[in-house]
Image (cartoon, rainbow over all chains, first blue to last red; front, side):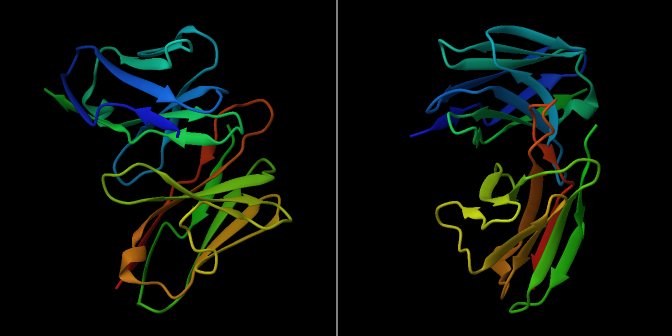
Length: 109
Length: 116
C-alpha cells in the first residue's frame, strides 16, 4: 500500500531551526509537496520538489532524496506564527496526492 | 496567484437536513476539483474527485448517495451533504488542479459544518 510517515508532533524554540522529516512509499512518484496548515484553516502551499536536492525559499527549505523515499522541511529563524501543522504529500503514478498525517509544530518562546 | 473560494465558510444545520457547499475557482478554469474532509487533529481525507461534465469519482468508503457532487462548469463544483447527521460534522475543504504553470493544488478556505 501507499504510505507517508512524518512525526506526529515536534517542539522547538523561537529563533531556532527545526527539521521535519517525511518518508514515503508510493506507487510511482510525480513530486512531493509541503503544506502549512493553521488550526481551522485550509492548507497553504510551501514547497514542491520533484528532483533530488534542496529547494530554498526564504526561511523555509525542502530537501528530497528519491532513492531513499525521503524529504525534509527545514524552518529557520522560527517565529511564533510558525506554530502550525505541516503536511507532506506525494503525487503518485496516477498524479493523485497521497497525504501524510501531518506534524504539529509547537514553538515556545 | 490562483484563488479558490468556498461558500459558506461555516454552517450549522439540524440532523436530517441537507447542506450545499460551493467551491469556485475565481480566476482560472478548473476541469478537476477535489473534495476533502478533515476531522479534528487528523489529516486531510480525500472524499472524491470532481470532473467537469462527468460523474465524480468517490474514494472507498465514501457514500456517493450521501455526498452529492456536481461539477457543472469549469469554475464551480458543489458538494451536497444529504440527510446530515452529527457524525458528518467536519471541516470540508475543496481544491482545484492548477493552471498548467503551477504544480500545487489550490485550496479553498474550507467550510466548517456542524450538525446538531
